[in-house]
Length: 515
Image (cartoon, rainbow, N blue to C red):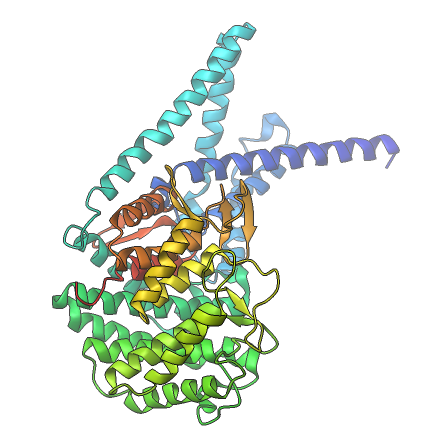
């Protein structure tokens, strides 16, 4: 092969890569701008798009124009085989109708682009005409995307404002989560994104079950006629969290099984055992039986003893890591609930922790409970107080100490609340990046924290801050886009992060007990 041949090959590879990137980007952009189509798209659509676009681009690049249509079936068959294998390997599932029909989306995009180019070639004979056509095209695209979006957001938000008008939506979202989470443990873990790794899959599965249990308990208080069914669901969720499959992520970090160490005060496992204890407490408080009483007592005794034997009433979520305040708050919530069900047992530990928090763990800049602590209970120097952690802390505090929670909520709003078309909580109180990525909050856009905004809904609901709550639900609808199917509803983003759906339902139903 001569140098000229190598140069030609390199040029073709570069051109092919650019073309491939353009077509994949275009298709993903169209999907992103039309979330109302997501409900009819197969879950593996992103993989299918990359697969057929790559294979057909290679085919079109190597096959002469006069023979392309004659052998078009070859790349299609190749696509079917490759995509089926990739689906089983990467997605652990296979949707034959989705794989077979997915290239029609690419064909539709191709036809649209070709017709647009043909139109421009005929009519855009001058610079002025080209500019007019470009502006008109952009305006048309914006209208096509915006008008259905405005209508759908308006329709979905119309009933927000009271639990009476939100009843159907809340129960439909409950039904969706039940269809996803009331399942064998392995299937629940499979609902979590595989790309985040086994540990975070386990954590997200635990949080999903815990937040859904909170939702079910809340719904039982708001709509008492649903209590029996909700108790059954909470029971199923407890069984899932008790399974070896779900405990594995915690066992791998501690090199021991959490349930085998309940007699010891020399370890932690605080995140896992606190969520489990909280769920059992909700089961009991909702009217469940006594089947978990022995385990419930063991879990709370272990938490109480470990907290009292710790350096500063705090425990590590994992070895060799800082104290994560939201994880500690779950333990305090669980002990608070146990005290309410068992004549005040462990209430002194709860009171001691809250008293110490007020005196030693408030951020000097914002007045909010800090996000992290050193193992000895001291504040970490120059560690920022984050919107996501602070919002979750506030919502947990509503279940512990109402007065302290209200003080913290007002401080949260003064430091982190951002009003606008997209209202929500910022991730950082002192700056608002246009675009960023945070390990806890997720994508930070215009300074807004997706996690912080969702978590703050719990405190807004509890304190009847209807303006903030309604604004958050509007933001959730704009960004999340509700999809409906039969008696189920969910945000489209639940297809990516089911835990977010569970969190939002738990937070928006966090009504005070005297509702």
